[in-house]
Image (cartoon, rainbow, N blue to C red; front, side, top):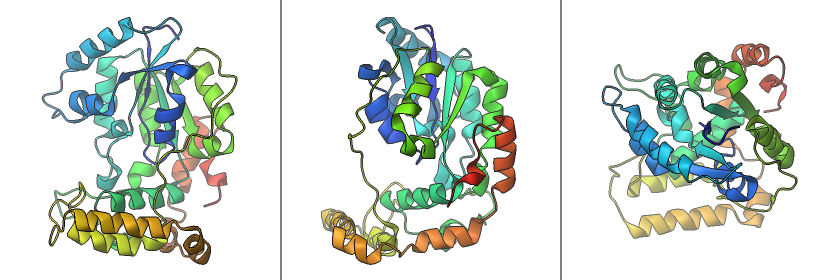
Amino acid sequence: MHKQQTLIHIGYHKTGTTWLQKVLFQPTYGFSSLMSHEEVFKNIVRPHGLLFNPENAQKLLSKRRNDLELKMTGIISSELLCGHPFYGGRESDQFAQHLYKIDPKARILITIRSQIPMIVSVYMQYISRGGTLSPKVFFSNNPVMGYTRFAPEHFEYHRLIALYHNLFGRDNVLVMTQESLAKNPLDFAQKISTFTDSTPIDNLKTENKVAISNPEYIACLLRRINHFKAGPASDEPIIDLGSFSNNLYRVAGALGRQSMVKKLLKNVRPVREYVKLRFEGEFQESNRQLKDMLMGDIDLNSYHH
């Protein structure tokens, strides 16, 4: 990859993106960040579609590229770019168009995951952001007219990947799975290095830890605590108890992650049970089309949920 080109990693959410950003996409492995999450939000995500101006991002990227060292790959990595999963990811196509206007010669990395565990993780992320809805209500896919909610179509990956193929060219889009990252991080990293024509990666420090999600068996408790604390997913709690409710949330999460509690409740998976009941089999056709599109390289239907 020529140093004036850019690798844009759009997510999806809950596919190991934090690990990629904090561990792999670092100068040690030949990557240099061109834009932070905050800058992605300011220049690409936040602007109203009618006000979006690609020149703002282009000026920033031009300056950052000029500072890149030889053989260093410029990276933009932000799961904000695939749309918000709490609200159906309905902006994902618009963001793709924005990215094409910013840099039509960029290469694109899309990370995906088998849908059932992905959706469970999204719900737990919703809880961590202050959400109070039960799984049944959150996943109902029955929005009030004019108000968007969670939509399973966001996880039918073949459509968004096809759009990126059409915009940037099939050879400039790499699709990888969270499952392959978990199985062999070094191989995962090497495939990205090969895709970007960047410095080969011979070894990888995989011991780096990122934030651990709360277990789903305490989701019911945590969302009730959220009724008394403000958060992005619930701006107006019944009563905001401030630091008390924030501390209570942290204590509940810490207790839930205790080894004795985890051992006792390891088979209690209320969110996963509901998600499987609600969505089992729903993504098979999308996954089949994705497998055909990628010529068999990825088969999400083969993963155990």
